[in-house]
Length: 128
Image (cartoon, rainbow, N blue to C red; front, side, top):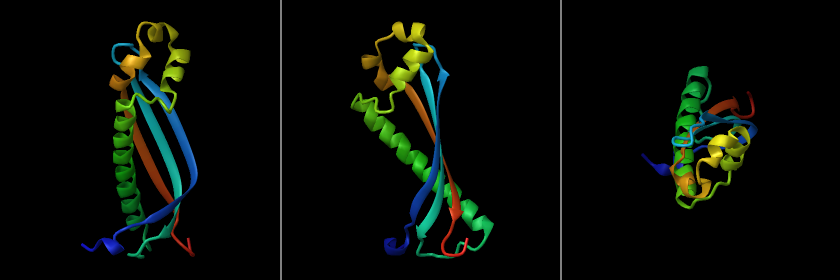
């Protein structure tokens, strides 16, 4: 299909995030990153968001796309050994004994980080 009409522009109006340590064991540290975005649609060329079913379908598609993007970004950050979310600091504060059993700098690239992004479209245009 033509890409010129296959896009959407959204504006995040409210965001919530929750970072959890799912598994604190220093041999298999696992984090869960949960984000919830309330959004309004600024541009959508197909412009037929007149039913709740269509909006829910778009919520699911946007959530899946943004979750995949987050997974790619996390992979890049871990390859660069860049802990921009300060997960090491959070881990050290909550599970100090486990943190001291590992070398965060060398083991951070192997830490399991599971992102989940949920999109809620709250406004679809002039009439919402």
